[in-house]
Image (tube, rainbow, N blue to C red):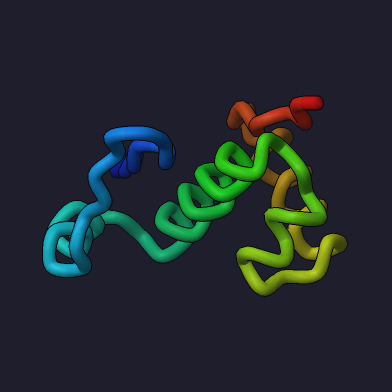
Length: 82
């Protein structure tokens, strides 16, 4: 399993160009890439599922189902931060 971690946005954060991201993804399955995208989006949204679902273009229900699947697999899911 390949895990791709992208730094959270903030002061001094540098974003990767698409030609830099694609090589990092080669060797990862679509499910792995999707899971990482969901988890990173949740982290950037401070665990706010409604906001993350909007960013991802998913319904809150679909996102909730993905989160349940990840948690059942023992994957740590970012919790809501006040």
